[in-house]
Image 1 (cartoon, helix red, strand yellow):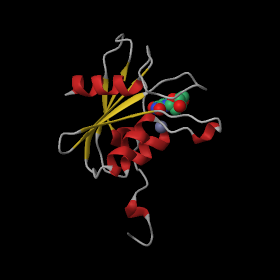
Image 2: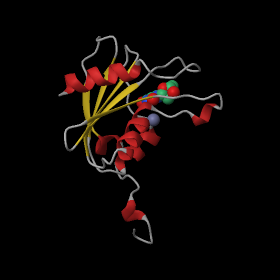
Image 3: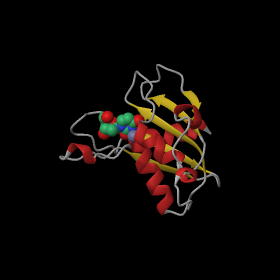
Image 4: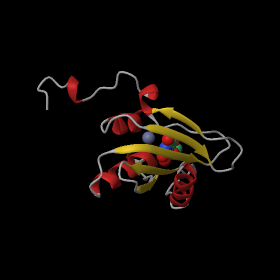
Length: 133
Ligand SMILES: O=c1ccn([C@H]2C[C@H](O)[C@@H](CO)O2)c(=O)[nH]1
Ligand SMILES: [Zn+2]
Protein backbone atom coordinates (compact mmCIF):
# COMPACT_ATOMS: atom_id res chain seq x y z
CA UNK A 1 0.00 0.00 0.00
CA UNK A 2 2.84 2.42 0.76
CA UNK A 3 4.10 1.85 -2.78
CA UNK A 4 0.75 3.03 -4.13
CA UNK A 5 0.71 5.98 -1.76
CA UNK A 6 4.27 6.91 -2.74
CA UNK A 7 3.44 6.78 -6.44
CA UNK A 8 0.38 8.97 -5.91
CA UNK A 9 2.28 11.44 -3.70
CA UNK A 10 5.16 11.70 -6.18
CA UNK A 11 2.69 12.49 -8.94
CA UNK A 12 1.02 15.20 -6.83
CA UNK A 13 4.45 16.57 -5.89
CA UNK A 14 5.04 17.33 -9.56
CA UNK A 15 2.08 19.69 -9.44
CA UNK A 16 3.37 21.55 -6.39
CA UNK A 17 3.19 25.30 -6.79
CA UNK A 18 6.25 26.43 -4.86
CA UNK A 19 7.90 29.32 -6.75
CA UNK A 20 8.99 31.05 -3.54
CA UNK A 21 10.53 28.23 -1.51
CA UNK A 22 11.38 25.93 -4.40
CA UNK A 23 10.44 23.15 -1.98
CA UNK A 24 7.93 20.83 -3.66
CA UNK A 25 5.90 18.52 -1.42
CA UNK A 26 3.36 15.84 -2.26
CA UNK A 27 0.96 14.00 0.03
CA UNK A 28 -1.28 10.98 -0.37
CA UNK A 29 -4.01 10.26 2.14
CA UNK A 30 -5.52 6.79 2.46
CA UNK A 31 -9.19 6.84 3.48
CA UNK A 32 -10.86 4.16 5.59
CA UNK A 33 -12.69 2.92 2.50
CA UNK A 34 -9.45 2.49 0.56
CA UNK A 35 -9.37 5.59 -1.60
CA UNK A 36 -6.26 7.67 -2.14
CA UNK A 37 -6.62 11.46 -2.11
CA UNK A 38 -3.58 13.54 -2.98
CA UNK A 39 -2.38 17.07 -2.29
CA UNK A 40 0.57 19.32 -3.07
CA UNK A 41 1.76 22.55 -1.52
CA UNK A 42 0.37 25.73 -3.04
CA UNK A 43 2.25 28.95 -2.26
CA UNK A 44 1.25 32.57 -2.67
CA UNK A 45 2.95 35.94 -3.21
CA UNK A 46 1.54 36.72 0.22
CA UNK A 47 3.81 34.12 1.81
CA UNK A 48 1.77 33.17 4.90
CA UNK A 49 -1.10 32.05 2.70
CA UNK A 50 0.82 29.00 1.49
CA UNK A 51 -1.05 25.73 1.95
CA UNK A 52 0.94 22.59 2.77
CA UNK A 53 0.52 19.41 0.78
CA UNK A 54 -0.90 17.51 3.79
CA UNK A 55 -3.56 20.11 4.53
CA UNK A 56 -4.46 20.32 0.86
CA UNK A 57 -4.99 16.53 0.83
CA UNK A 58 -7.14 16.59 3.98
CA UNK A 59 -9.32 19.42 2.70
CA UNK A 60 -9.74 17.79 -0.69
CA UNK A 61 -10.70 14.50 0.98
CA UNK A 62 -13.26 16.14 3.26
CA UNK A 63 -14.75 17.97 0.28
CA UNK A 64 -15.23 14.58 -1.34
CA UNK A 65 -17.06 13.22 1.70
CA UNK A 66 -14.23 11.43 3.54
CA UNK A 67 -13.66 11.85 7.27
CA UNK A 68 -11.89 8.67 8.26
CA UNK A 69 -8.23 8.31 7.42
CA UNK A 70 -5.78 5.53 8.14
CA UNK A 71 -2.52 6.74 6.64
CA UNK A 72 -0.88 9.77 5.05
CA UNK A 73 2.36 9.66 3.11
CA UNK A 74 4.28 12.90 2.67
CA UNK A 75 7.14 13.19 0.23
CA UNK A 76 9.68 16.00 0.13
CA UNK A 77 12.39 16.78 -2.42
CA UNK A 78 15.00 14.83 -0.44
CA UNK A 79 17.42 13.69 0.63
CA UNK A 80 15.97 14.44 4.08
CA UNK A 81 12.68 12.93 5.20
CA UNK A 82 10.12 15.59 6.05
CA UNK A 83 7.47 15.51 8.71
CA UNK A 84 4.23 17.50 8.77
CA UNK A 85 4.38 21.00 10.26
CA UNK A 86 2.56 21.79 13.49
CA UNK A 87 -0.45 23.26 11.71
CA UNK A 88 -0.92 20.16 9.58
CA UNK A 89 -0.54 17.90 12.62
CA UNK A 90 -3.43 19.75 14.23
CA UNK A 91 -5.56 19.58 11.09
CA UNK A 92 -4.90 15.84 10.78
CA UNK A 93 -5.66 15.28 14.48
CA UNK A 94 -9.16 16.68 13.99
CA UNK A 95 -10.03 13.41 12.26
CA UNK A 96 -8.40 11.07 14.77
CA UNK A 97 -5.16 9.17 14.88
CA UNK A 98 -3.48 7.81 11.76
CA UNK A 99 -0.04 6.71 10.66
CA UNK A 100 2.22 9.29 9.05
CA UNK A 101 4.68 7.96 6.49
CA UNK A 102 7.61 10.29 5.81
CA UNK A 103 9.35 9.85 2.50
CA UNK A 104 11.65 11.68 0.12
CA UNK A 105 11.94 11.84 -3.62
CA UNK A 106 15.50 10.71 -4.23
CA UNK A 107 15.06 7.23 -2.74
CA UNK A 108 18.14 7.70 -0.54
CA UNK A 109 16.27 7.10 2.69
CA UNK A 110 13.78 4.41 3.63
CA UNK A 111 10.37 5.86 4.55
CA UNK A 112 9.68 6.19 8.26
CA UNK A 113 6.27 5.51 9.83
CA UNK A 114 5.16 7.39 12.95
CA UNK A 115 1.69 7.54 14.53
CA UNK A 116 0.28 11.08 14.46
CA UNK A 117 -0.32 10.74 18.19
CA UNK A 118 3.48 10.62 18.69
CA UNK A 119 3.97 13.75 16.58
CA UNK A 120 1.26 15.67 18.43
CA UNK A 121 0.70 14.33 21.93
CA UNK A 122 -2.03 16.00 23.98
CA UNK A 123 -3.57 17.58 20.89
CA UNK A 124 -6.23 20.19 21.43
CA UNK A 125 -9.50 18.69 20.27
CA UNK A 126 -13.26 18.90 20.57
CA UNK A 127 -13.15 17.55 24.14
CA UNK A 128 -11.25 20.67 25.16
CA UNK A 129 -13.98 23.02 23.98
CA UNK A 130 -15.91 24.19 27.00
CA UNK A 131 -19.20 24.21 25.15
CA UNK A 132 -18.58 20.60 24.10
CA UNK A 133 -19.67 20.21 20.49
O1 LIG B 1 5.44 18.98 5.67
C1 LIG B 1 5.52 19.97 4.92
C2 LIG B 1 6.51 20.94 5.07
C3 LIG B 1 6.52 22.01 4.20
N1 LIG B 1 5.59 22.11 3.21
C4 LIG B 1 5.63 23.23 2.29
C5 LIG B 1 5.18 24.56 2.82
C6 LIG B 1 5.95 25.52 1.91
O2 LIG B 1 5.21 25.68 0.70
C7 LIG B 1 7.23 24.77 1.59
C8 LIG B 1 8.43 25.22 2.41
O3 LIG B 1 8.16 25.16 3.78
O4 LIG B 1 6.96 23.41 1.85
C9 LIG B 1 4.61 21.17 3.05
O5 LIG B 1 3.78 21.23 2.14
N2 LIG B 1 4.60 20.12 3.93
ZN1 LIG C 1 1.93 21.82 7.11
